[in-house]
Image (tube, rainbow, N blue to C red; front, side, top):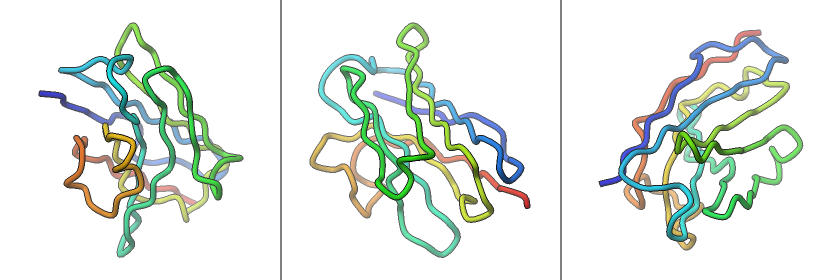
Length: 125
């Protein structure tokens, strides 16, 4: 059974770079055909899909965040990482990593695919 766990600082200063790592166990991030994704949920709002890296290392980013987003991976550690630069308080959210099949990317539900428990990130001004 695949398990995902987010890690990273819970507090980031505005204008700095947010960096989160997702550690995967029970599956290889280079196997199969999944989108290893980052998703966030701000207070009182729905899920916002930030982007993904697929099994071959290809990436896709949400258009509105593309200029500030980078997703990379370390296959030796079976981890993938989100970097979001020039953060503002508007980036405050619970950030999740997830493994989804392509047709479930962008879903409004956390019941599709396998998700980490989420980590709160607060951006202070």
